[in-house]
Length: 169
Image (cartoon, rainbow, N blue to C red; front, top):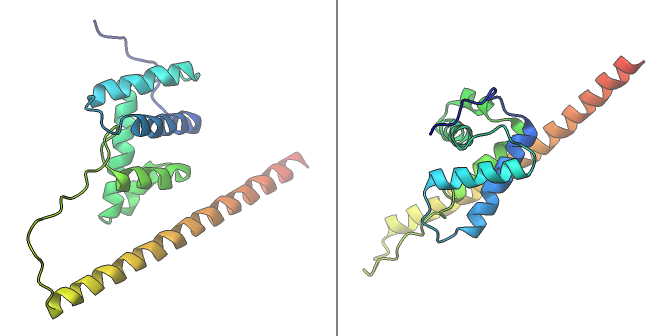
């Protein structure tokens, strides 16, 4: 028997925050689980109802999750406009989820070590150095991006404060 369609499907920040915290909890609990994503989203919907957000079905939660995940992946490929589908407050959380492992409830699998012996040529050393430099640049970029996000949040808070102050006078 199908449930009736819920009246609304726009998301409040509190609902997204609750959903992401539940996803994080489920990832921690189910590191070796083989549960299906439908069951996972059903669990999230039930827990959201217990936390005071009764208006979200497992399908709505699944769609929101994959919408934000897809937006982040498109952003990484150069489509900056898609990033605006993710509320600014949650962009770093979504990035962390996607970078840590794409599937809810399942950690990203570690690459298997091969048994063959590696030969170090000058080209291998050069490529390894490039990879190392690239890793350092990415870490610096992520650090600067996080710093910029914090600065943007502070600026937004100041703007909000000044608007409220102006309106109340």
